[in-house]
Amino acid sequence: MSNKKYTIKDIAELAGVSKGTVDRVLHKRGKVSDKALQKVEQVLKEIDFQPNPIARNLKNNKVYKICVLMPDPKDDPYWVPANQGIIDASDEFKPFGVLVEQCLYRLYDRSSFALASQKAIDLRPDAILIVPLFQEELRQVLKKCKQRNIMVALFDNYLEEFTGEIFIGQDLNQSGRVAASLMRKIVGENDKIGVVHVDLEPHMELKQKGFVDYFNEITSQITIESKSFSTKDTFDFKQQISSFLQEHPTITALFVTNSKAYEILEVLPEKKRIIIVGYDLLEKNIKYLKEGKIDFLIHQKPKRQAYLGVGYLAEYFLFEKKVPKKELLPIDIITSENVDYYVTKNHSSNSLL
Figure 1 (cartoon, rainbow, N blue to C red):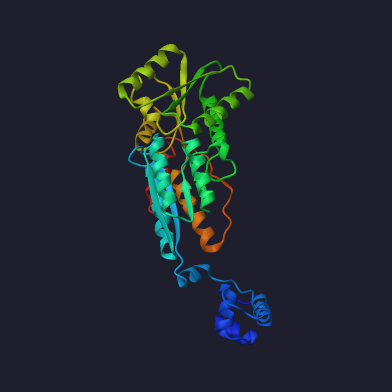
Figure 2 (figure 1 turned 135 degrees about the horizontal axis):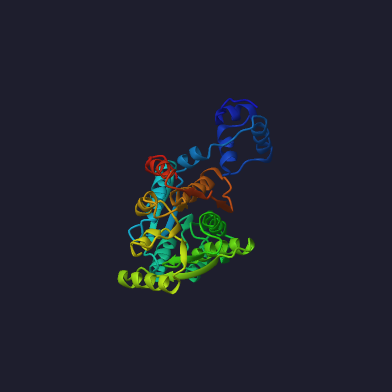
């Protein structure tokens, strides 16, 4: 195969046809006789011609629009790196005719999600990248997108009903199993563990299932108690935690199923030392990890999830690259010994941690 870059003029001369004929064949527009079509196609085959989709899109002024439907990062610091991942991907693909627009919704607010999703659909995008927190509302969004031929991909949160959709994130069940494996190494054989959901979302139950299944499979004597808490009222939240620990005074460890381990630590009695496994590189979580009050954090890579979501869709439109049906990211275990590496990388302008 030759490395020479062939122009339309070169192809026309090789095929013995006009440049206009080659242009019509390449861009599939206008009428071309069967004889001329065969000549051009034969030359394209012989030179192994590969069209440049970016150049083609720029020439045709083709613009692709991707809408991102996700929680407002002002509501929860977990979404700040995800937001940065969207911005980074937008900056990278904008010069090639891919425009990214965010439609943010209030966390835990179904009506806000419905309004933001309708706004996204009304923008008539080629694709929508969604953080799905509400099952019934997502079902309606998918129905409308199908009617309007809008491509859909999901990231971060996995809802079991929608296994047929494109998903970028982590295996949440396996994530729970990893947490259980870590916990097993640092608790006693007959200890009691609490599984704590702070501001419950569906994905947390998948983590709990993986966690519980792990201990059931090894026929451990460890007992597990689970409880959901709400942070809407700070005083009430503190009372809930205190009541839970009073009801289960023998609990020695907590598995916090989302990024809010720091919320638990801020209301724990000062003299109460409990083993904690949680999630995510939030500033307060990192602080408590370094102080030894959090034993392990599992990194969910929200920035990379968001960046890949936009990137896969952009490359599908630009290069016709197939979007993976399910892209599961590695489950990284963060300790006080390696956290600085991740923090340094996370603040790097080109990092996708």
